[in-house]
Length: 92
Image (tube, rainbow, N blue to C red; front, side, top):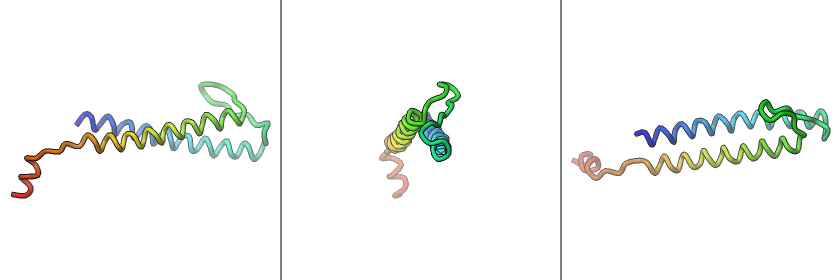
């Protein structure tokens, strides 16, 4: 049971990160349209970055979140118990 909870939490965190980064990518697109190549995006933790750096960070994060979502779904499927007794009880 605890193994399943761990993968469900990882899935939720990865989905939240994917959504947050998708919104950031939308903001970057708007900045790029309005300011062109001279636009600057301010990240709360790492500070101001040019648009190229910001795109690289955001799409790297999106790829990482997608990988973690896929990994957690696959690992969640692996943690399902396969008991012979339970299938015998169902048939009876």
